[in-house]
Amino acid sequence: MNRTAFHLRPEAADFDPYVPGLSVAGVRERFGLSTVIKMAGNENPLGISPAALEAVRRNAGLGFRYPREGNPDLVAALAAHYSLPEQRFVPGNGSDEIIDLLLRVCPVPGRHNVVASRSSFSMYRVLSRLCGVEFRSVPRREDFSFDIPGLAAAADDRTALLFLTMPDNPSGACPERAEVEALARRLPPSCLLVLDEAYIDFCVDPEAQSFLRLLDEFGNVAVLRTFSKIYGLAGLRLGCGILPPALAAVLRSVHMPFSVNTAAEAAGIAALGDRAFYGETRRVVAEGRTLLHKELSALGFVVYPSQANFLMFRPGTEHSLNAAEIFEGLLARGVIIRRLASYGLEEYLRVSVGTERENKEFIRYIRELCI
Ligand SMILES: *Cc1c(COP(=O)(O)O)cnc(C)c1O
Image (tube, rainbow, N blue to C red):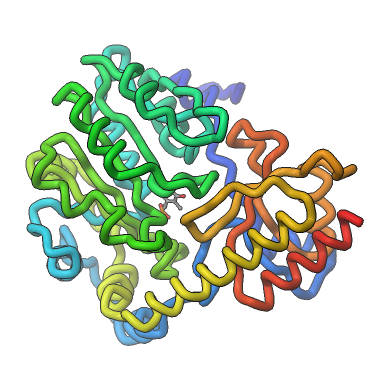
């Protein structure tokens, strides 16, 4: 409990914050290492798109100007890219900002609730709690997949938002679109189904797996997209909500002005047009994911099938080290992966797919630790 002399909302005083992965600089300092490989944040292994970098450089001189309110150029580019009306799009300072806005705009604290699967992306829970909104977490099935009927059953006419991540973070599994459609049909019309498609572009067939093409059929579904993963802009902070138009209008009216900065807007527009970088990222991730899955399985780890740019795994019965020891052992060798203890998964680890060289180094070190 943080004690101060000031008035504080109990939700803030008792706040259980989002736990980020470790940073390269932090690990360098702690272990006195010169090179550190980060495979923890699901960032793009190829870095920033060259077209986006060029756009940031070209627009750097505009840093003294406020961006245009509502980022109309970006909204137009998004609408054209996804062939959907501009009225649906709300850009944000990362898709985290859209999650935050939805939680502040939709549920009334003390009256409404929010539903998500247990051990999901923690921002849904963290921000619900900060808003003082009841958060219902629904257990998963034995194989870690979403219990879609269980989620539907947990929602009632006081459920404002139901979050579903597709593909899932941290497991990488992608629910069948037919199942998601059935869920959308079962929910009360007052409940917004929020499909977080942060990793959809790493799926085998993003067009077929995404819900975007179905939005017109469903008045109660929203999709979140981010530029932090496939577009390589995690540090510039850019994401968007693709929402029912009336709700988009509310978010646009209440959001913090200028939350999407000039550099992020220019980079986002350029990244959407950089199809070569998009395709190359998909290729590198698909190949790396296959390699990591094969090698980790060969070392006796239990590896979960993933359609995203990371793999969840846990030590098998023959391993003498537990997840925390493997994590620490890799850290001491300069490789940062993600422990999933903060997701409530004490014995699980998650590794982001890196470059070919990074994947090989990671496998070399984890093999060293395990024999
Ligand atoms: C990384 C991630 C996001 C993206 O967050 P940004 O704020 O856009 O960087 C959203 N949802 C999930 C599930 C994620 O893993």
